[in-house]
Length: 224
Image (cartoon, rainbow, N blue to C red; front, side, top):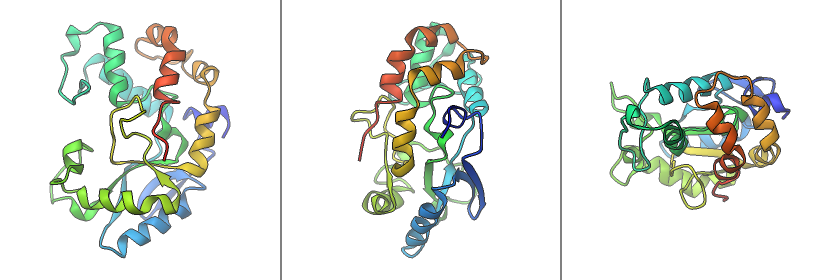
């Protein structure tokens, strides 16, 4: 991937598929479909609640959280009152759960937030919360299946909360044969160029801390 693809500013590396409808890296489509067929044989309807996400979408999420237009949570998942926080504190809170624009692994098309569509009750909104994947949650069975089977299709969980700076995300799966190289190529300079002229809230705070943020939230993942 080139710098524009790595930072979500180009879509040349991704493909749109119709069943299920999502956008993935071209090299991820076949492995995901194979994993989906295997899951279906055991009663799961494996679908991405989120897959490829471009820079502009990530920028909107970031700016909305910073401004309080979207819920901002602390490390434990409890809502924060944005107006009581400094800019630096807001940046830190956002990064617990959401990536910096240009630094999201979802830009690569290698990442998927996976659920079992058959486990979603009629009228229920999927939140991608820890409770949904807990032992009594609706997605506990599919989470267990993925833990046991995803690796043979090339997928792993980058955010387990062991070495990763991001909170544990049992729904987030990454295609290692492509994402390992993408993470290596997304250096500090590539990320700096991506945000330099973007209308990013708290850009000065981010710019000042960029090497530290890169080390913790880009390079800091849980390997398989």
